[in-house]
Image (cartoon, rainbow, N blue to C red; front, side, top):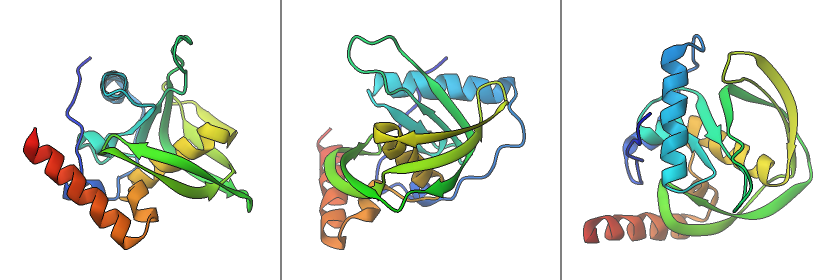
Length: 169
């Protein structure tokens, strides 16, 4: 396992649409293990493969808080099959847009289907933080960042802040 570099805005790769995965094999599991280690080190609760420069439809997530035991989740080729009409705002942040947080309105519940770490098909419903996180990460797979849901002014300010912080580092 290895910690990989996380791309930050305005890297053009973050706007790329990721390709479906052909098979869940040892190489893909090694990628997911690296992604999980990278996410924990950041620290974050979700990471899409494109955020480490790999344009594949793969997400890792762990919503365990504080002292809770780690509960890693793996999503290969995830698809949202249903969205609730009810929406809810949630303050989001992103490892690719460091130190920027803002409220995004998303469907409160979604149903999704995906392949797990072993390539087994899974269908489930998500709500709360899980629904927010899976939608946020799936946006990455389509080249969309959470700041793309904000006004143009807020988005431009966020990108400038990240650029300025990167220069200072």
